[in-house]
Image 1 (cartoon, rainbow, N blue to C red):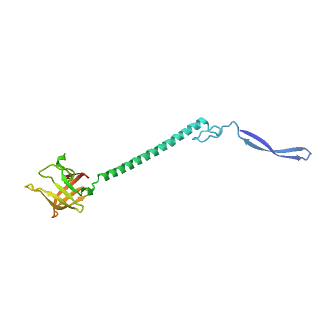
Image 2 (cartoon, helix red, strand yellow):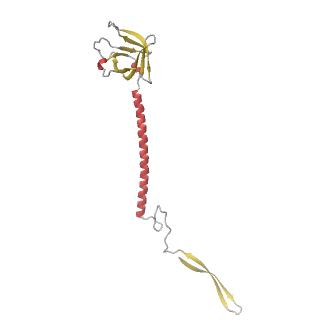
Length: 205
């Protein structure tokens, strides 16, 4: 660091004996040393003489891009997870809708098709006009009407089977169909396992 003296005032004085002398006053100033090291730049952006060097800038830029890429990746993963959850939830709702028993499909005449039976507990019925059923000693028949009235076949000891009238209802929560006689006594309670336009599967409840 350099110090410089600067002449600021000069006065000429005369003494008693005629001698003259000059009075000077000086002001010192300080100049920065050119060889002194510059102030350090912020640590996150290293500099030399106040300017970012190219290698350091490249490294800093690369680290910044990595940070941005990491943030973008986290957002992408979060979005993907949310999308998958939403898709799965929607799919489950659709499956539930597809699996729901459509009560209106019951409203027709159903004939027992025991030839197709593969389980002891599940009975299979087909629409009465589905095919020409083979001769049999007895086949159960149910006819469900849209006003909750029904007809059902009754087994007779002399093989003179006949139809009687009653009523029916269906529970959408339990998939239970209940068949009553004309006195509202319960005759059958079936759990509907599968119901489509051409097939009805039920098991005793």
